Length: 399
Image (cartoon, rainbow, N blue to C red; front, side, top):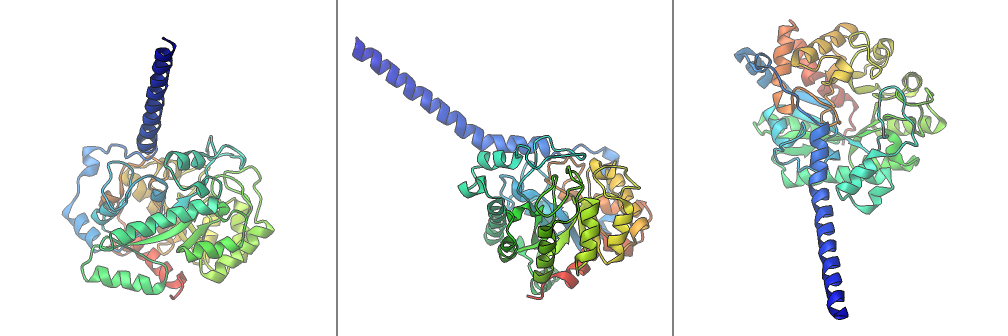
């Protein structure tokens, strides 16, 4: 009897363990997808907003289209395949006639994330996501490892689908991209950037490590203060630290473009004074058009533009107040009026835990909305990608 009871307990425990293992495996496989569906939504458009004119389609097909910011590498998706969630993958980039996409890597975000004030010691959301998505063990602690892992994912996708995408790390590869597209190949140029330089793990030498992995744009902060200085959404409002100054100079030396999208006004001013190269605000709105804590003061935007910088206008309501295609076009038009037509670009923030009204396959709706705002075709060509192309032609390393 005792033997029988032990056998029952043994089999019961074995069954329970199998159930627990199955439940954990199911959560790990399904959970990240559910999380992304809740955070990277494509909200419905009205039937009227979705209607396209032949004129808009014709103009859109002629454009070189480029986007300064998408966080797609954070998520558990194969970018070589059309996904049923999120905003960006190679097939949808091709459908949207996108020629060049900057993929920015997120390595840390604070729990309770908001535009007003976040603390660097808050619980980190990306650690949980890394565990749920079964990232390599070194990414559980090291932010540099997280950046390198996401870069490796992009390299793998490009190797798997060389007809869909190619890496752009220098001017020679940019020329190759232009030549392939001119020959009719539907190839997308893929670039790497960071979402905050806490990805350096406090080590100046990691700038070279990330450069060697293909990174050509680095933002200084994200949603919290870091070793380089204050965030627009942090607690200190501080300017560049000594480490931050060293980092800016090293980025200048290597030819890494500097993004101040989430930097405090003091950091932006310090970087403007220190950097030998023009700055980027990769995803934003303008404060005068959309009075949001997400956007730095317009005077700083003008100072960046006056020194040859580039401002990427986003597609989500937190930055532009109206996320419809018409709203995006009006935000772009406002930026052109404030900064000039040579300083404005696209900076979607696709897949950045934001809800948008379009995904990247629907960018023709922005072209049509810009036409409705009476922007000339030449100006539309500049903001849809021409300005970013010109900026890269002058700022990327030669080879």
